Image 1: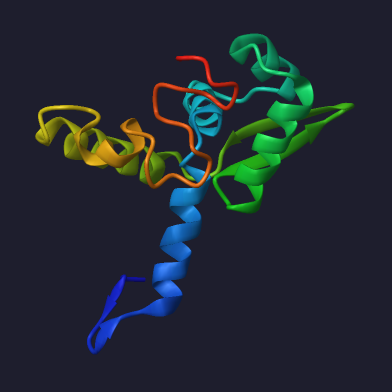
Image 2: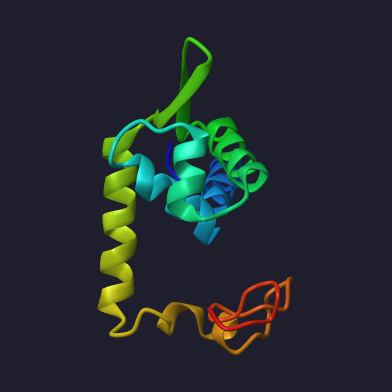
Length: 134
């Protein structure tokens, strides 16, 4: 799938890209993915590592699973989660790091977010939903 078809922008591909980046557009979901990159974990392991509520972690894992980024494996009464596609995800994260580094500043691409303008939530990169600086 490419975002550009021979005749111009492919709306189906564009929508798929938007959904993927929405899944990756939350710091907590990225932290879940980063921790799963080290291997399989249960939700309770992720809760302990990330310091988030169990319901929050479960919601993020479910969201990532719906997007095909995380897969579940049931073993007895435990469900273990792992990255569904570790190599392409690692390549995507590397490409994002290179893009951010090439700007000379990790916030250069998101000036409107750092200023607080243009983001639907009204929060900034440095500020969480509670208004405190991260």
